[in-house]
Image 1 (spheres, rainbow, N blue to C red):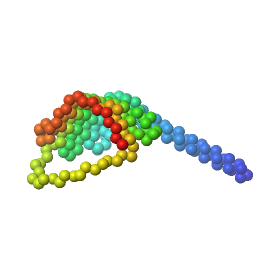
Image 2: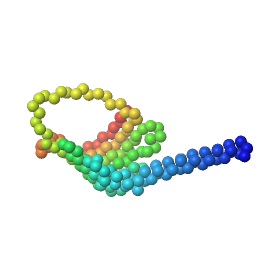
Image 3: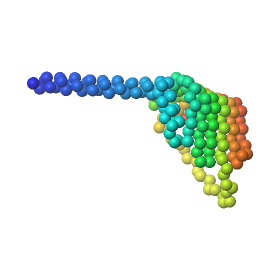
Image 4: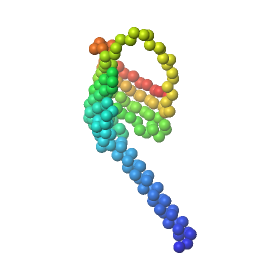
Length: 168
């Protein structure tokens, strides 16, 4: 065989290899962003020992995602979010941004658990600026009810508010 024949064969094999790898990447991303991929991800989270339980209602990460409930259980912290709706603009990812078009939370309940009384005054930590690698934009955040309690006493109760945020 001549050198040109070997070179042509190597180029064909290389081209087909790159094409197959790119096709597999697009296939995996497409499945991950579909409703089936979202359900697989939620099942993985529910079966794992993350202290997180998610009740799937419908949709996908690519389109509007609706969840019945999210429960986060950690030591000294219980969070329950009911009726969550999330709409992410994935086109923003191509320009290095995360765009959340709409986030709706019907009810958020936070229980900080029983904390022992502190005898000594705690040191006040200095607030530092958080620098994110990407711009995060939240066009609309609507929350129906927020309840925060600690030691069985209600600390905060908010009803129906609407926000729009942008973080850099």
